[in-house]
Amino acid sequence: MEYEIELTPLALEMLIGVKDQRHQKSLSDRIDKLKTDPEKQGKPLIDNLKGYRSVRAVGQRYRIIYKVELEKVVVLVVGVGLRKEGDKGDIYTLLQKLLSE
Image (cartoon, rainbow, N blue to C red):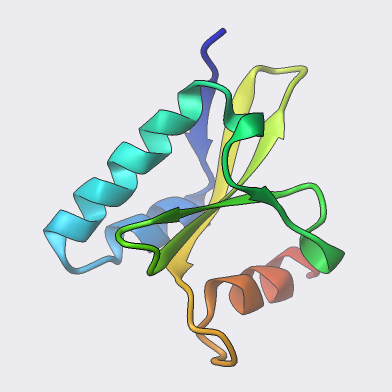
């Protein structure tokens, strides 16, 4: 079964904001791969991001954060960004803050 991919406005803005076109294309290609078996890809997140999953992209520098909505057969991409552990611009830090609002 193939899933439909949806990006939130924030995820789309983050993807468009990636300045390097090669990275942007790699991220888009990786998102497209989520159409098949998204619940078997990446890793489940914990704490404030429980219910979401994360896959690595572009040589492991970027993360794509998504939620699988089984009842709708949809993969909802909520964020795309650089992993910068300990930095306020880290994708996980940004999404925890935004999703808790």
